[in-house]
Image (cartoon, rainbow, N blue to C red):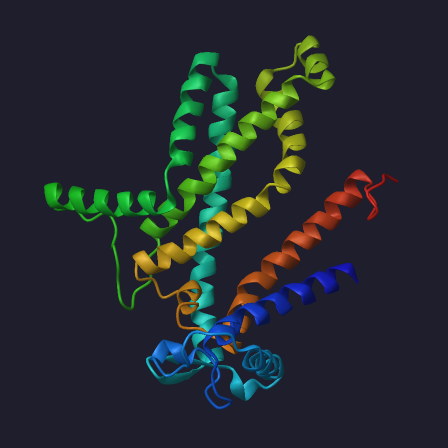
Amino acid sequence: MKIFRQLLLIISGFILISVLPVLFYGGGKSELFYLMMDGKGNSFGFYPKEYLLGVYHVFTGVFQQDQWVLFVFNKEYPLQEVVVERYVYSMKVFLFSLGLAVVTAFLVSLIISLTSKWIQRAVLSLVNILESLPDVFIIIGVQLSVVVYFRHTGVLIGEIAMMDEELYLLPVTCLTIVPAVFLIKTIVLLLKEEEQKPYIELANGKGLNPLQVLVIHSFRNVVYSLFYRSKVIFSFMLSNLFILERLFNMRGIMDLLIWSSGLSFVLISTIIFLPFYLVFTVIEVRLKRSIGLKEDGTYA
């Protein structure tokens, strides 16, 4: 029941946000959504009546499939025909980048934890520098590097932008960097905390292999703490995916948000958000059960 209430509140938030421009620009009944985009809206002001009417139209439109359309350059497209292919493409890029970031972060963190202190400090300094760089700077830097390399060698590592073909190499590379850097820093810091715990001292006292202690014991405990930071990584990657699809001219679902308004914005946002929300919820419930944590915050 709690999960249903949270989901209902989130979708209600999408509806309220989707009609927000109408609150300041107004609009007629027949052309309610974002008329100011075409220069047909009213002057800037405050239109609460039109806003409430817009919320009502969006809410009722959710249950009327014939209204599930997307307007692009004044052309109408059925949302079902546009979304599926673009959603699959975006999720392939997103999930592959996420998997690559997780694997890379765990391997690099493992190497860092087994090296000397000065190497750890040097790597963490590099990680801090990469973490401080803006996401757009990294994406454009990768694009420029490919162009410069092509001009000097004549070898094109990956396409920068295409109209109809799907790009994977460069978008996945760019989308992997930021979460991988964040994960590396987080895992290394969590592993340092684990080193101070009694079970690690006991394992070392028994003469167990440091690699064995790290992989079997430390990493297993780090996973629990890492999950509760994964929502931050998720938000980073979604915002980066939106930027990527614009800069690489990718035909993904995030790019559709540029053209969406009103009902189409609510439907596309829900399609993007809902699967991840359900996955996070299921994993969180299972983790709480595995450690005996009840809904009220007490332990069984």
